[in-house]
Length: 450
Image 1: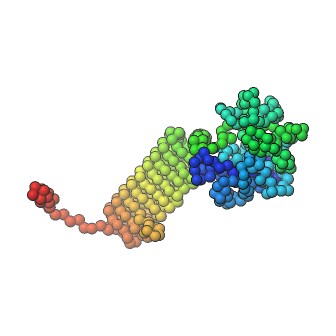
Image 2: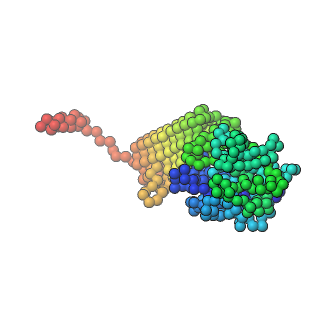
Image 3: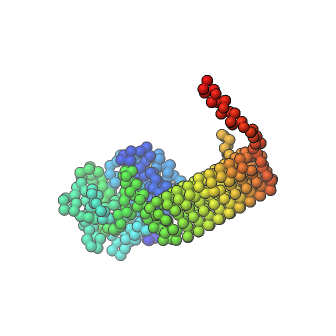
């Protein structure tokens, strides 16, 4: 890329009324991350000198989302078109001598490599005045059209509302994304008028203005998926499918086995090691890392969790944030973990809840065991030592510690600490009354007849 400093302007002022939502359109999640943050993550790879987000309706939500990223925010009080929106960033870029990249917050999948292509093309030997990102959609619909030669030199750009029938027949469309030198961009925007069908100030008009000044702009073409925008929940779902399809293909190319790829759902930051096997209908929420050789069985939901080498999770397991499954450990069907660590080779195979818990290496958690971690006001921890055996249907009332190698008898309710290698038996004595059941039924039948 050019060594000139880069500024990025992200347009996020649209109301997004078609989403029918109280949440700002650009904050709706794609693969577990807001669309806007997808885009800003790609922007960050270019290390821009300045990033400006143009906001409008719902500005408070957008401002809160971008504040931790250090982006500047400017308000477009009136929605007067894309050219007008970009001009709102001018005061924040006063005196900036570098390149400007204009992006759209509801076009979240444009990658850093595409952005670099635009900047590189801006500084190619023929030194175009501007670079427009174009694409050829399956259905061109109402996109603006780009009329360009084989060399990419733009002859004309026109919005669909203002296009003639022969121009609407052109298949090369304008994504709206553009790169231009700051020194020219804002001077040209000051000359843009709104004498068009919508009465708006269009950003693409700067291309025609610079052409009238005797300088050419060029178009760089990309695949439609790179520049697909989102205006409705239906379009968001369609883009999610595109993202998921790509991520599944990448997972398999990197050495993971997906038994039924189309049923596996990834988050934006899911990490899978080599020789990981993922069975059908698994959902990964954000913050999951799965090490080499691990297996995630079907119908498991995993979020904010770490699964170590060779571990087996599921089927029908739920790992919540803070769950750590150690090497060769097993988490079985209908087991839930939250803020819990299962040590190397430990097993919790059936119908258990482990919350705020540490389980030592090689320990066994019997079916139906629960750690009672919440007293209605505070959370408390349970510590289970290495090699301990927790009998089925036990309740461990935190805070409590079970020592290494200790055995908890089935059905126990444990409220006190136990030392290593102890037997913990906490249940009522068994009372057997011979013949009582028969006598009870006889009395009940007699009462019913009476």
